[in-house]
Every structure is written in C-alpha cells, then in structure tokens.
Length: 318
Length: 255
Image 1 (cartoon, rainbow over the protein chains, first blue to last red):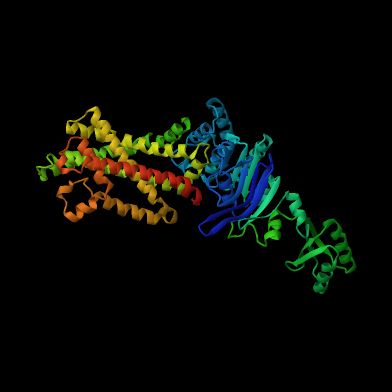
Image 2 (cartoon, each protein chain N blue to C red; image 1 turned 90 degrees about the vertical axis):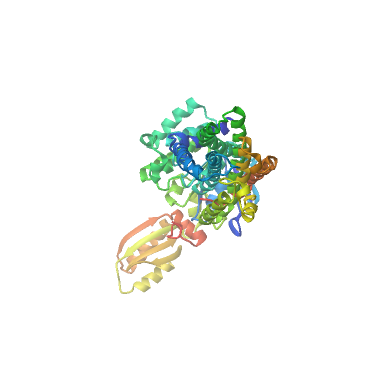
C-alpha cells in the first residue's frame, strides 16, 4: 500500500486549473520531494492531502484513507508545516507549540520536554517568549517547522521548510526532517530549491502546470537526461577554432556542444570518462593546448530544464 | 470537547491578556453613557420614551453587540487571508467542532465585552435581576450571532477583493445602525425611514431587549415578532457560516 496515492486528481479555482489530473504516489517511510516553480501546483497538492482544500475530482488517499470520505481520520495521522508561518501574531512560540501538541493529543509532560528540546535545536529557545509578530522571518519559519518535529506525525508535509532560513538553520532543519523519516514518518517536501531537494529526497517528483512530469530517484533522474555528464573545457585560442569546434562535435558520445566565451565550451556527453580522453587526443593531434577540463554531473536544475524546457529558479519563479 | 475548549481559549487569551480592548470598550461605554447620554437626555424630552439616557444605554449596548459581531465575521476573513484558517482546518478535529469553537469564541468575547455595560445599564434601569440578565444576554447573543453570520455571508466578497469587502461592510454598518430603532423608537421615524428600519436586524435586537427590560411596549415592535426574526437570522446566518466553512473556504485558495 502506498502512503499517499492520487489518481487523476483535479483541483480547480474557478476556471483556472491548479492540478490537472495528477497521478502521484509516495511510498511508506520515504522522503518524496515535489520540485517545481511557483504556480506548478505544489502547495495545492499539499493542501489537498492535508484536507484543507477539497479536490474538484479524482481520488486522493493518505495511508489508505480517502481524504474526502474520512477527512478527520486523515488529519489525525498527518501534520503540515505551511509555506507561510502567519496568523498567530499575538501568541508566543512556546504557547503555539504547546497548543499544537495538545491539539494533537500529546500529553503535557511529554510535550514540554519535546518543546524544550526542539526549541533549543532550532535555536528558538531565547525567542520562546517573544510575541510571534516580533520574530524574524526565519524564526517564524522555524516555529512552523517545529510544530511537526514535536507532533511527529505518520505523514509529515513540509511546504518549503527552509525558505527564509539562514544556511546553518537550513542544515539543521534538513537533518531533523531526515530524522523524522528514520523514526518511521513518511515525508513529503515541496520546494523550488535544488539543494534542498538533493539533500533530502529519496525520490523527486517534478511538477509543472499541475501535472507530474517525471518521478524517480535523484540519481536516476540525472541519468535519464540526454547527455548524462557535463564537461566544461577551456582550450588555448587558435586560428582554426571553428574547425576544432566541429571536430569536438563529431567525437562519439557528444550530445550537445555549447560554445561559451572565447575558447570555452560546455559539452553535454553520454559518459564523461570516455569522452575526455578522446577530446585530449584530438587536441594533442591538432596541437591545441587544453587549459582546463572539468567533468560534472548535471544538477536537478539541469534535470528540470531537460524535462520541462524551463529553468527552475528563474526570476519569474523565484 | 477538550479540543474545542482549547481552541476557544487559545484564540481568546490574547484578547484578555492584557485586556486592553475590553477595558477600552467598557471605558467608551461609560463615557458615552454618563457624558453624552446624560446631556442628550436633557435635550430629548418625549413622554413615550421617559428617561432617554436609559433608552440610549440599551441602544448603545445593541450597537456594541453589532460591532463585536461584525468583528467576529471580519476576523474570520482576516484569518483566511493571514493563513491562520488553513492551519485550523488542518488540525485533527472535525469541521463541526471547529465551527463550534469559532462560534463559542465569538460568544465568549461578546459576553466578556458586555458584562460591565450590561451591569451598568441594568443598575441604571433599577432592574438588576436574574431574569433581566438572562433575557438580555439571550437576545443580544442571538443578535450577535446573527450579525457575525451576516458578515460571514459577505465574506465571499473578501476572497475576491478585501478592499471591496471592507467598503461594503462599512457602508452596510452605517445604514444598518442609522436605519434602526437603536437610537430612536420606530413611532418617531418618518414612514419611509420606518419601512427601511424594519429591515435592520438591530431594530429587532434593540426592541426585544428593551421589551425584556421593561420599556413601554407601545413604542416597541411586537416582541414575538422580534424573537422570530432574531432566531431566524441567527440560525440562517450561522447555517450559512457552517456552509461557507465546509464548502467555500476549503475550495478557495487564500493567503
């Protein structure tokens, strides 16, 4: 049984479609990362799973329970950390967490210990009695994440868990999310941060315009794109630059060769280890000095570009 | 039921710790009644009304009820926009219990806000009895819930444009208060005004409370009629609120 399963899930706001027949699954005790630009339907999917929004049509199940038939039971097994930590301006972090723990049925003695521990781990202990409205954006976001770390639900949903948080804080949050999974939670994380996705994901689903474009492990996704490796090379400038470029293009395994600045190229190649020796032989024969060679794996950004034809973190999406 | 009480207390706590708004409301009432009310009662001398300060005191409580009810409705919309409502909707309790908690929280706020004004008014009227307290609170609660429900009913506009919602609610409040019997009895109103005043829920609230507190029934609407209208208003608008929570909010992207 899947921990989460949607079949042909549609969500419409008036005439606009946020989800267009989404088929999506999450295995038990895995971290699934939803990757997609703003407006791709990530948050709508999370809110639908959390029973905050009702689906327009299609089937949505969490731990085998249909979200439209058993919404209260679904809410009892999941927890959601929202994208925007807002709405409790006149409460204090410690109060918010105590309330959340009590609502989720955690006993007072147990919750007090956990709250103290989580507040300290997320560096919120000194801010525990400040009004929420006086917290910084990063602190407010950490309070939002802390709710789930205390609740430890069977199914934990995080919407952009580390946005607005500094680098050290991000690393702590990611570690805590990994620990949640180790303790048996199924985790769904929506993000448009490539680094976050690479750090956390057991599998990644790329969403675009309300549809799942592809779903696999990070490793497999990178292997799936044409030109599995990227070779960035710099050649000494010669008069026959155009000829060299043509010959580089003809090396077996070259998928695409992109000239950058003068003498610099980016080659998308099938197997970097096989392509580089051929390239160096060619340059040796043509008496062209190779100034530098760098073989890299494609990033998830490249994967996203390859599958959707769009950059993930464009100014429009950022 | 524990979770319902927890929710009510969680929302109510910032209102009463510290109780700044409550004290300001009580202070405003006292000033209005003992300065404005006292002076205006010297100017208004109508045999049918008797002491206008007493008439005004009840009217002012009804206006306060209207304001608090409106505030509850508006808070609901603000919570939706601020992202608090999605959080509440994600908590592990049923929708009916959540709606009950929101309603009880509004009711508790109303009760706290009206405690001192009602005590002062009943003392002023010389009618501080258990019956008058219960009767006045019951009718004011009916009115308060009705008004809150009415504002909730208008909240669908806020999901399209919060500016338009604020403008409509402000305009509507002005009309509902002025075209009602809150500050003057129906018999003194010109025929056209009186007709419009019978459409205002405050007319029924004010006249029913005055009837229950022993004002001359000849200047008031038929109390049975007022009870029927207020009950219908509270039930229908609360039903609308529950419907909105179930259907509209869960289907409208907010925040």
